[in-house]
Length: 226
Image (cartoon, rainbow, N blue to C red; front, top):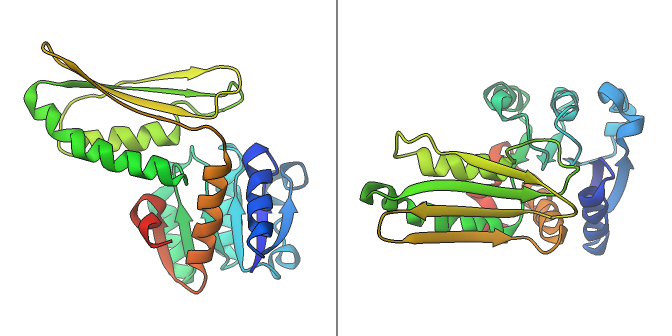
């Protein structure tokens, strides 16, 4: 496939590397050449089958709207824009294009989501949950999209206000911990990413899965199919 990658940060570079290893052509548009989505012209978008976004929360929405308006399918790994999901979903469906977003494209993290779901009955037995997340000091959004997803999973069947504590330090790739505390004992669930490659591989495989499809998808709902 011909892919257009938006963003050339640490994860973006790995996405390009993985995509080429898997036999895809990759065109990279750096954020410095795409202010306010100005680089997403018809000419630049035309050759690409799918656009992959790993940019930042302050520019991702403009990128999404430009690509969706052009009818381009997208894989979006950038977080910090989820309040706009209903509007973006409607635009994607109106255009008849395809879109996959995810708070985390790591297969391990999505398995972790399943563990969190399995642990939710603890809330009916006087366990109080708390979420801790750690990322590198350059990460701009807090709490992380992954932590927000975990929070949502825990709150589906509960009225509890579940707190998230965020840490930004050094070169931490990403660690998420859910602690269920009671008067009798404490349960710990933890996922600690060793590298960004898991995120990159998941994003490229999501793009491969998306080819030829239409619709709006959350990666945590389709990762088993890729």
